Image 1: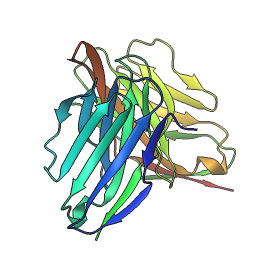
Image 2: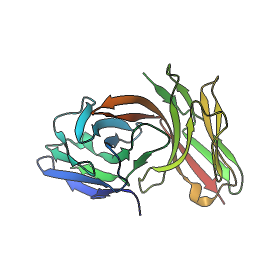
Image 3: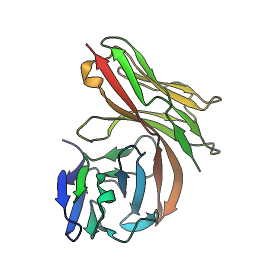
Image 4: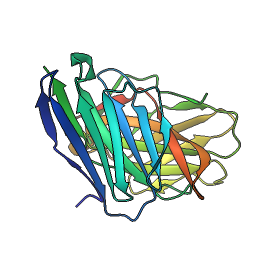
Length: 113
Length: 121
């Protein structure tokens, strides 16, 4: 059982839909991250939350809206997406800054039609 | 800005042979961390091995070892005795930071382009 769980694993949505991706970590970590992995591109950091406060937003369009209600849960709300937003969205969590404590979830495959 | 380069888009290896996946990095920081992840077709990023910049010995984890050459800024992954289940995408990553926020600290990972490893029977 992975320490970072993402749901749903697969999502197909129309450009006018509103949907959300969910991430939950069971590791007691204090930072959570959203990464985007598009075809033939390196993983791109989207958002960072540290103790439920958004501390990084890497020029992500407003059609992606993150939410971190507590240190264990992270959401990515999706609204009026474009086909080019189709990608694998990976959630990760970490504890402080030491060693190898950055763990990823299984990812959510998003297809925008 | 930090940068990770993986120059091998694809690699092939025979089962039970060893293979080296290349990774070079660029940073002006003195303290940094280097990671390797395995990503099977299912999408999950599986942590394999970690090397801290101040670690004097090369990291090893079972069949995985990291050939860390600090002066050359390289952190190659060596997989010994390859298995069919090793076929996957492999990513090298470097951690930036620490960044301070709200009384705690966090890091950020910068990833390379990845190398697709195929193990032949």
